[in-house]
Length: 291
Image (cartoon, rainbow, N blue to C red; front, top):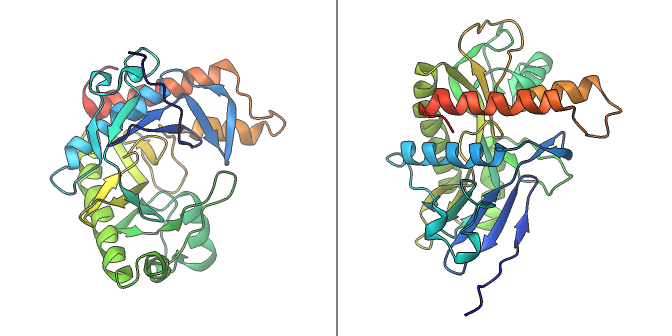
């Protein structure tokens, strides 16, 4: 009998999604994106780091919220996926109806949040204490959702009130309920994981989660969780308020691109090497395992 071939039903900047009938196979490629562009280079092994790190966090948070992960072992997947190309970078997932929000949580003031705070004293409509310094830990983590944009467009930061409207539009009668649930889950998952990470030498400054609804209307954590692509990881060692921090994420890539505006989104080898080394270092610190 001929092996069934699969083609992606959806391709994101980094991930490819395959429909395997009663499940989805999410494959993290080695592509890297910055400033809403997919770069010309691959970062070898990056997809494996993203998948294995998500697996670690899905297991770690399963007592807080159910998630979509079924397996990361290609032996559990259709024959097409049982080869080196998909090994380590593929996750078999439950099918969900995804909610139209990026659920962003900020535990520290940095990036676009810092820029907004300097101008208005607020982040996404949330008034913050006066006198905060760059990279300072916030008194409590804040939920600052955004809308999901198509590739090439920018996600739009919105207020919590606006997130209720967005959800109400798609789920009449449930907007307020779902918004409150995803807000509370976002902050609970972040707190648990940020506390753990800090004990292992990494500050999670901010991150984004995505949630979906299962067939029973239950809210389920999905997509990727607390990877260097979806989060800002800082080394605890050397952390100091009042300035920007070195990081374990794409900051190397972003900084180089900013300094080289004519690069046509092509990176030199040393930036690629430093970037994957940072991703692997974060993985090892958090999981205690070498990839």
